[in-house]
Image 1 (cartoon, rainbow, N blue to C red):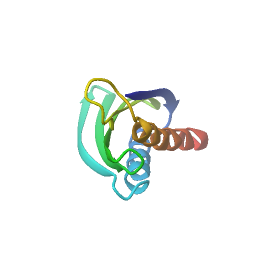
Image 2 (image 1 turned 90 degrees about the vertical axis):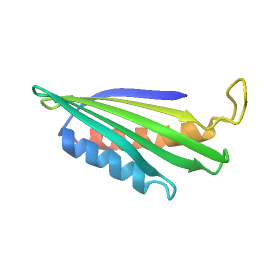
Image 3 (image 1 turned 45 degrees about the vertical axis):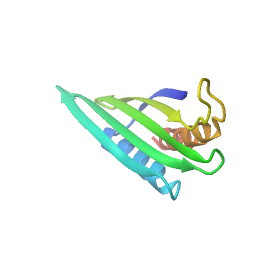
Image 4 (image 1 turned 180 degrees about the horizontal axis):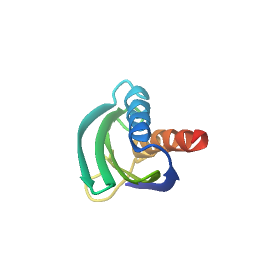
Amino acid sequence: MAKYERSLTGDFDGFLNHLHNAITQGSASASFEDGSDRTLGQTRLAVRVYERYSMAGGNRVSLNISVLGHANQIFVSAITSGGSQALFFKINTWGESTFLDQCINAIESYAARA
């Protein structure tokens, strides 16, 4: 499992769309699995789950993204899982790292232009 978290400023919907497009268009095998949206007052939460096939690892990995927003403040947490082929301990985590790097690049590119 690999994790990345960051606070930034910007438009919640614009950021969410940017992430979604970067993830789904960044790999031929990437797919949007499901999501959930909640609003409490002026605070919004979006959870997204993506999956893709890792050629390097020969397996599937998932990416769970949680985006919390209030006004123009955004907090994002991205966590990958899966990808290991071992029974009792985790080996071969290349696919997770690559999937997370793709997400990090999308987050950083949005932050740089905001």
